[in-house]
Image (cartoon, rainbow, N blue to C red; front, top):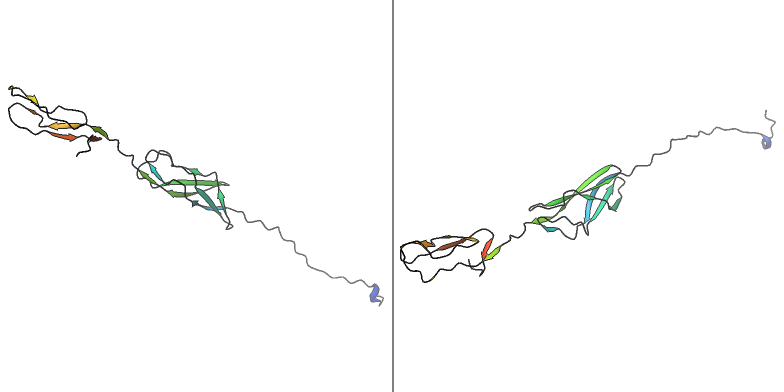
Length: 171
């Protein structure tokens, strides 16, 4: 009932109220990793192990953020072989695994070379009718023409075996 006095009248109105489900926050997911700083050492000799000292790994995420991470693994960095050109770095976060290659150089071990004395001809040989040895055999080389039966002048040839060099540096 309305008594004509607005001062005491009651007016009602309806206002729509919408209650939505709470927004699910976007989950931050590992997208990729990169080597943001190369390791201090990138050149190795065969047989050495990869050294990650100085290396920095940066993770990139689905929400466009980045972070330097630790706890990465180097899966093929032990007992490096000649010609190997990279090692694989892997990082796992929330069961997502990402990998990146770090370039390296692996050189062959320097050959071990043993010096040997240059062979010398015996002097004062006299014909006996039997085979005489004009140059004695030794370690690290092979000889040809170092034995003869008849009197005369002969040339012996010494050829180095692999892994040897002449002690006087001659060729």
